[in-house]
Length: 209
Image 1 (cartoon, rainbow, N blue to C red):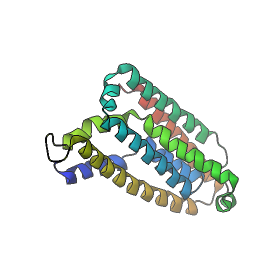
Image 2 (image 1 turned 135 degrees about the vertical axis):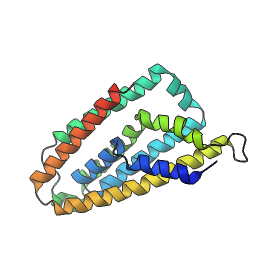
Image 3 (image 1 turned 60 degrees about the vertical axis):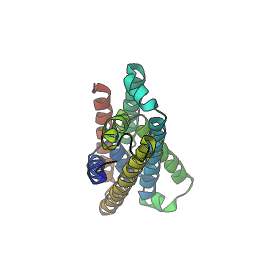
Image 4 (image 1 turned 180 degrees about the vertical axis):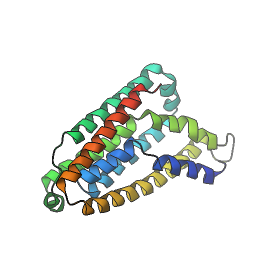
């Protein structure tokens, strides 16, 4: 592997760019609490582990080269983003501060939903697939002392590590911001804004070539 510093920089920039994963993390942190944001990150991490496994066994290239498979993943991902965007937009009043503190059975439901959203949005995001078959190979050395699959796992580990740290920072920033925003009406509009952005991400994903 060559130039891990350059690869890490590329990964950091990609993680910091606004995308579907970040918007879902922000939405769940805003709508529920910081734990929901962290659980969403766990779902995203599991999605990356799924794609790492797919890449290691060679199916990532097969999927990317199959118009049917790639389009299926793309449109399912786009539809899911639109779906959770609509749910966020039509949710009405956000969870109250008392509910956030109680953490009862309803909170457990939010945790499951947050995890599921992070996992599904990542698995059905075609950009994640392309990351594994276009960017990572540029930083791999063929015929080196470390096997290609081992290199892929290391690069995926760096991706997951950097993305996780950045997303955790985002969760804390959003949680701090939410404490300042005592107005439920304003929080509600923020939730609707997140919903609109997710819907637009879904539409853009569907329309991309």
